[in-house]
Length: 417
Ligand code: PMP
Image (cartoon, rainbow, N blue to C red; front, side, top):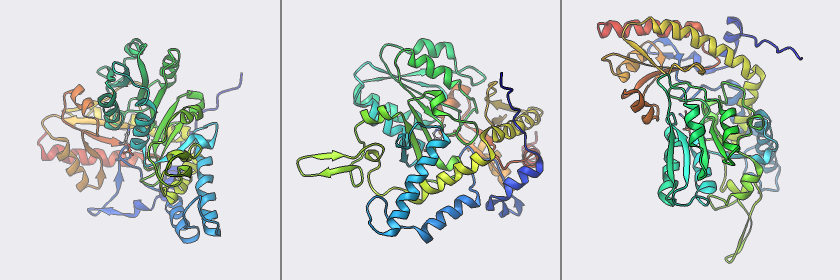
């Protein structure tokens, strides 16, 4: 048997080197060094990504797929080359299975409107979970309103783990799609998506995975998972905002009608009949985010060069350290304590609103998210209006955790706790 190679946990010097790739850390926030713990909302960008966008505009800016001139060729080559690198990053079988979209939200809406809506009949079911982000709830509610389909919600337990037994039982004859998050943005829970996809496929139900919180933090192999659809956003994976990916198996894309009409998604147009372009371009109407796509590939190359396992191991170390320390704070309750967790730490303080905590932490340069995290049903499940969320990325350090703890001590002073 091949020995399993141990994942290297990076030393402080290595992490400091990664951190120096991100120019934002030269910023001072209210006179303090930046402690950026809002990575679940968006990650910071390495110079390589920022340079790639600048480089594109300085040396290759033109529209794609339409010019005969040199710049248009450069833009098209870079844009399509990026698609190939993105496909390799998630181990898609073909570059054509990568559809550029604005982000996870648009990817899920595309599947909802173009794949599920034409299939769904009154009484059909769409299966999601109780820990979904609004962008994996509301698009399905649209489809339910449009078709008479019904939304079914798999429950979660008090730790924030999905009830897998209930899930298995809820996959039914009339389930048209399972749409589940890989990692919960509000709780950090990592769902056992491989097993869940297998269970759905055993009943011929296709599966969409919301990978917004996963791609930058753990290895994602869409072929090993065998998911039908996988959605993610560039900006949560060290890439620019405004660009994201819908991965879909080629046969699913072939079966889907285009969603938006316009330039580039057609092969020919007359007033009587329009013939659509091949996949994936039939889903990419209009001038796309060319520099964004190119820079997203650079971001994923950056992640790949470090290694998703290494990043995951580093972040797991930070999570364990921060979790132990936060548990010792009086009147603090962690929300989301599943065994399988990504580096997201949600918490509430008795009698103190999350926004007040976030505002005080900001005074010390500590950026966290405070609110419902676009997951109001999760807040309802745990009986809180909002949480404070610290979420980690590859450039975070133990010193960042210590800065958070120090700033939390100030919060407690202010509120007399
Ligand atoms: N799903 C999850 C789990 C998320 O965390 C987010 C972003 N917070 C989204 C979907 C939506 O991503 P975007 O806003 O980039 O479309």
